[in-house]
Amino acid sequence: MAVMTAILGYNRTRLTWAGALLLVLLLPAACASPTRPPAHGAQGFQEVGTASWYGGKFHGRRTANGDIYDQNGATAAHKTLPFGTRVRVVNLDNGRATVLRINDRGPFVRGRIIDVSRRAAEVLGFRTKGLARVGIQIVRRGG
Image 1 (cartoon, helix red, strand yellow):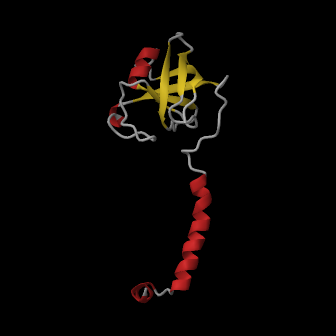
Image 2: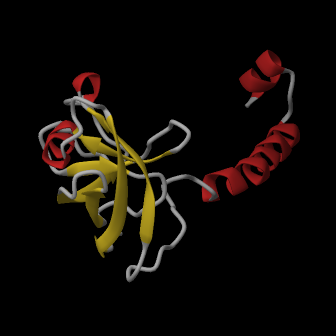
Image 3: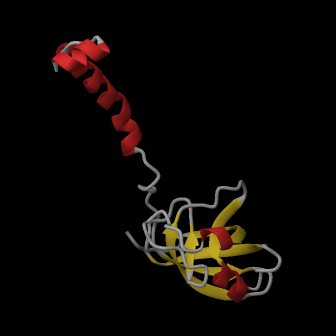
């Protein structure tokens, strides 16, 4: 402690108070982390909006829940649904549908409600277009 006092110019009491103050200031931010999404009712949750897909540079990297991202998997990113939730995604332009597992956070582009894997975009018929108007509904809640 004497070395810290000499180097930093603080005594033990100041360090203790500084640590306590830092804890008080950071605790609310930690409790409000984005990994704790708000609860959604499993029955009847529906959302309609724009979907996009992601792959390429994200393939092989870790997702928000710790999985290794596989652009050929049946997965998706959603801003608030709990990880592990299974959602039915329907392309409202062509009627194609698939069930995907939420394992990542996003999309981070205004106006989009879900990012799907490259393979899911192929199944839904919008990989070349890039975007689609979709509806999503919870099949089985994760978490």
